[in-house]
Image (tube, rainbow, N blue to C red):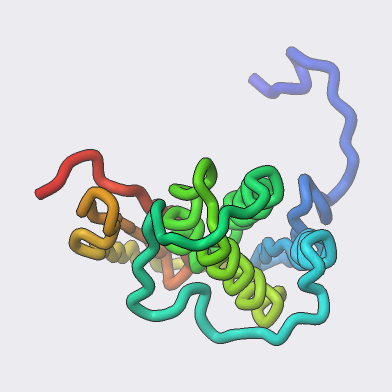
Length: 182
């Protein structure tokens, strides 16, 4: 039974922009990215002309709630992290950094803000990245997982991450701080 038989529907044509996501469709593939949204957010946080970096976080960065530095405006920090969380819909490369930084939304300091701004600098240099889904005959599912082994200084808990690829295209990803200490 077709949905048109049950519900009143209007065809709006091929989707090209939805909730900040740009959708580029062809007969053989779909590419989804958030380039326009990224540029808007970079300008919102005065990072439009920042210098890009190659990685979202500094390698082996250890953040703590009580790092001894001056606290920053929590509303602004929360807004920045919220934007980063929204980007993870099309950017699995931002998931780990955003997950770590979201732990400090109630006690954000200058160090946390500096790390969040680094993620924005990374986005600045990679605004063209997104999810590309390509039509293919053979399906191959590959999964990867990672844990940072007691990466949180405050409670010695690990962050676990995973990503699944279907024909070398990321289709599912997750990053979460573990509930218990091993």
